[in-house]
Length: 304
Image 1 (spheres, rainbow, N blue to C red):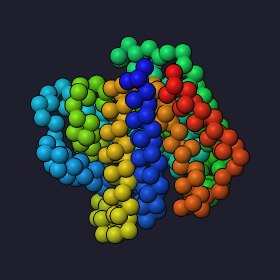
Image 2 (cartoon, rainbow, N blue to C red):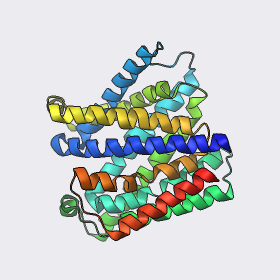
Image 3 (spheres, rainbow, N blue to C red):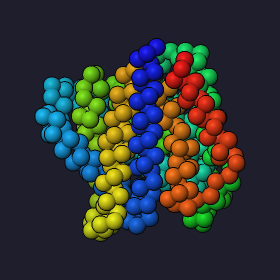
Image 4 (tube, one colour):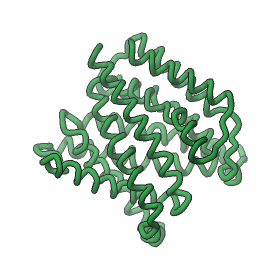
């Protein structure tokens, strides 16, 4: 039980990291675009991990890691960092961020099912209750009226497009969950930072061909020259891909993937207050109540 709680507390650290990264990535994305943000953040994350591990006296690439574990981690990065994020960002343009985040709340049960199939992990009754409570809070908070004007202008309202957008967002949730499970397969006691270092190359292996094929290289180069954006990306790369993802991989040593995924699902909730302060967003009572319910679910997960 104590180890279980350690995993859930580490997951809360990941929530903090992803909350910070979401804020700064959003700000940087408004300046240079989402595709440049995606590839630059992965390159920065790899460089930051390299520096941290050199200062720790170890190599960025985990020593003694076998080919099988390396391939699992590369696949994890490709599925989570590339496919999952690519599908999610595309869904924003079709159904808007609010509905996309609602679909992302399906990631915890997907993770739990995959964890059960791949590793045979069983959830305790308290874990199931905590997951359900957390997901209910997230769903409640993100299902209110979307006041994001920019997203509203880009939203396509036709029925077919809506279904395509929902499927893309579901793919984003599945990508996040699949990346977590593949990462768990490749961890095998390796250093979490080293494992994340390998995962960044899996993500870059997807984005680099995409950027070259779509002619987005010029936008990436232009983004690198934008100092304010690069500063924000540096902060976000450390908080999210480095600290947040490494914390997730470490947390899954102690807790089931479904539980870890449920806790990290509260990022759309924890970002409410910072977004009000820094991005001048407005908040509704529905979002506040959803936050309370989601946090209650996290408490249940930790104490059971």
